[in-house]
Length: 340
Image (tube, rainbow, N blue to C red; front, side, top):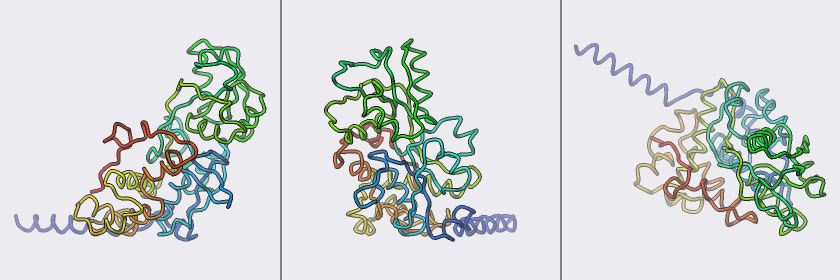
């Protein structure tokens, strides 16, 4: 009886050794070979991705890209951004033009199953809304009957608008544009009565209009828009790396680990913090990464709460409340799977 038992134990130990030294898969190999991570980015979504006055990408999605670059390459500065339209973003990921897509992309069943994509984790829970001019006197979406509504093609927003209008028997005239900037400019110039897209983007766009106080965002939310970071089908290791990097940022906020106190937290005896920061366990090597993968990501951009506040929340011109994007311990939906 002892020999089979010893053989089983040896096999288990061998399996552990293999798991702890995972070899790089195709995407990880390609990223390391070029020494850069290529992310698909939005042409201009305040709070998610915009170029600042120095030409630096700023926003929640831009920071998510930097966190992944730091986790994989140890340096957030090795993140590269390729601007993609709504129509081009999914083909760009499918074809390998970009390594990962943190670009205000809604996780839907069709995209997940028919488009050759995998959605790793939600980094923002959103919903589609409407913005109108205050002078129009419109208070609710149902009052938009007969209105011309600006919307961007190739988005869930275009389909949601049609579904909502049909379900609520509200006749609207969609005015569809290929590029987000075209849609914004058309609304700003008065070519349409309302602008519809994700409510968070409306809040950001409103701050960039000539007179933000002339515009209001209606309270009606007509859809679920879970914005998630996407990768290609077929590379489970890369899927794991991207998913667990997002989870690590959320976990860091849960545990009180910040960009400021990160080095102090290395001395923590809290088992969860020790695993997160690589002081115990082989959680990085299990994915082919360094043990400090999560430490590097947090060092680069902070935890999820810091990212949110800086780009969308109290520390930004947009000033969105956390709402459903708060931690689950405070009534929100942000919940990281355990690193253990």
